[in-house]
Length: 157
Image (cartoon, rainbow, N blue to C red):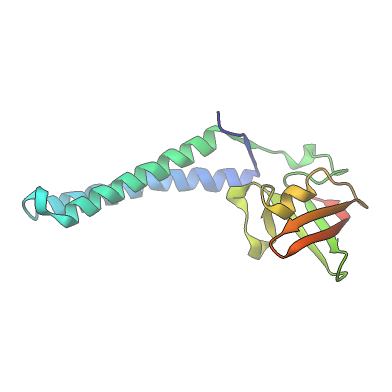
């Protein structure tokens, strides 16, 4: 059984909309591409037809992946979160103890991660290292550049 993925309502809705788009527009486009390629003659030597069929296979795999993700997704209610420890959907302000720089990240599911928005996956090294930490605790995280220590300064929604 696949692991449960905890999502925000926004992340769940986005995944659902993506699935709907793949099933409707994506399947229509794939069928159209196959039909156009089929009209061009002998299917055994029709590279365009085989490429369209391959694309259809990729589309169906994407649909299958999204359906599985939604089947194992649980939407978290932010009002029910315990803010005494870093967990999924919390914002955690941390301080790099080496250079004293502070940064705030929101811990999210892998499918919602977006570094530009300062949303990091709970399965990333930093996200994993912060999970369960309380304000004042230090997380020692192994990065490609070596171990870094982060102090948890604040936890919020």
